[in-house]
Length: 86
Figure 1 (cartoon, rainbow, N blue to C red):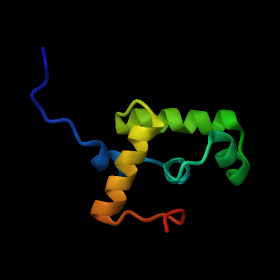
Figure 2: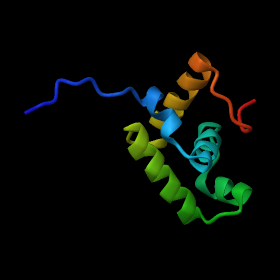
Figure 3: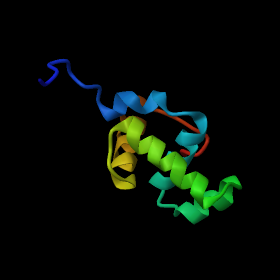
């Protein structure tokens, strides 16, 4: 049986991300590799992958490109700002 309740859009799920997840999403959205993100944040590549998997799950997307699109739309539509968005 399918639920008739509307599912929240990925854009509306952006506030569910932690500060670290937002940092990583912003960097990934700028095209940075996992290794570059890890170096910038002084964490392991495994840690970046872990956070990205959590981001994908929370946003209901399948990959970093889809996550970047959600982030870009949110920045454009709602003026979402982090210290990593210029």
